[in-house]
Structures are given as C-alpha cells and as structure tokens.
Length: 182
Image (cartoon, rainbow, N blue to C red; front, side, top):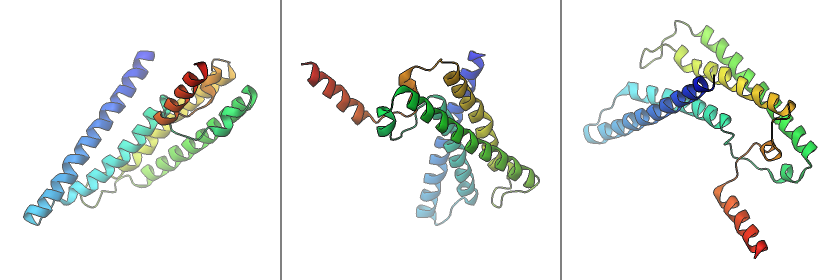
C-alpha cells in the first residue's frame, strides 16, 4: 500500500512539473509571438490558466501530505500538549470540512458542465472542474489519517504543530541554542 501511495504522489509531482513547463512554454511563446509577429495563440492562454489551476491544487496536495505548509505557530508552540492536541484536531476538522466543500462543489460543477466545451480550446470544461474532485478525494483521506494518528497516539508532540517554519526562523533558533550552550 505504501508503494502505491508513494507512486501516486510521485505521479502528482511529475504532473506538477509538466504543468509548470507547459505554462512556461505557452506564456513565453505567446509573448514572443505578440512582440515579434503581432500575433499569438489564443488557446495557449486558456490552457496555461488550466495548467496553473491544476498545478496549484496538486501542489497543495503534495504539501498537505508532507506537512509542509507555512503558518504562524507562535501561540500553539506555547500551549501545553493537550492544548496542542486540541488545536491540531480543530485545524484538521476545519480542513476536512473545507476539503469536503471543494469536493462536493467540484462534483456539482463537473456534473453541470458535462458536454460544455471551453471557448478557445474546445476541451471539455469537466477537465477544469475535475481538479477539485482529485483534490478533495486525495486530501480527505490524508486528513482522516492525521486525525486517526492523533486519536491513536501515534503523533509525537513535535508533530502537533502542523506548519513548517521558514528557514530564517529555524536558523535563528539554532543560533540561539548554540549561544545558550556556549
């Protein structure tokens, strides 16, 4: 099972890279065509916008799984372990609800737009709204797993803070610790 999950998230990373590369080629190609030849490729604007949406949602999934979101943890760090657990559970429940809203709303939009074609490309609009289904369908199990890990006692105290600090604050904390030890 672990191998399947790793493969899935590796595939998501490849799709993210593809979306970024395709956007880069389409946008800069269009800029060049407009500057040099006073023309452009209309479909590239639409497709690059779709790739951007897919890239953002898939990147959020990868970051959610790796617990890599940035945040402010000033208050949570100062709470006792029970307070951290309560805050962790509350944030997980809020994220679960938001993910459900994205999933259900995207499902409804996808159903409503079956058979509707995009203006410039003629691609089915369901491809655009489908990313919310992929996001919700992947985020909800990740969040449920984190809730299960909390309730079963599998999370360490340092894992109760669900954000990653910036490199600057990590470096300053290491420096403070080194100065205190010397």
